[in-house]
Length: 120
View 1 (cartoon, rainbow, N blue to C red):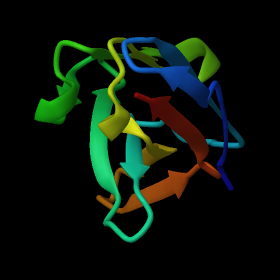
View 2 (cartoon, rainbow, N blue to C red):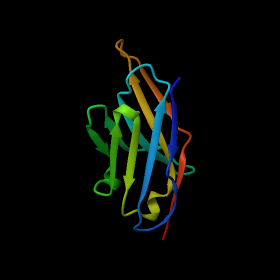
View 3 (cartoon, rainbow, N blue to C red):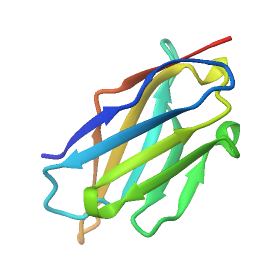
View 4 (cartoon, rainbow, N blue to C red):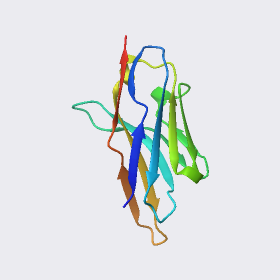
């Protein structure tokens, strides 16, 4: 069973920065994709950014140019550097890890979530 432990959330003023971290443990298989999602109460969880084991990244349009996702494969850790934060970035941020087996099965694991609040 894979465990994901997130850290780095908090309260920041608009224009400020935060860095989220997520450390994965317990996986016997390589984690293919790691990413960050966010959810506002009453709304669907949305993708923020993902990164493959090889370093390919993907971002939702609203964070491009402001957020940077990175990954340390040796530590099974993913980071999200968030700059120029806006009040609309306020949400609970969830770490995600995807494992793809040789037979094509996909397993998704989630962290417990960390609150990011951006004040105006």
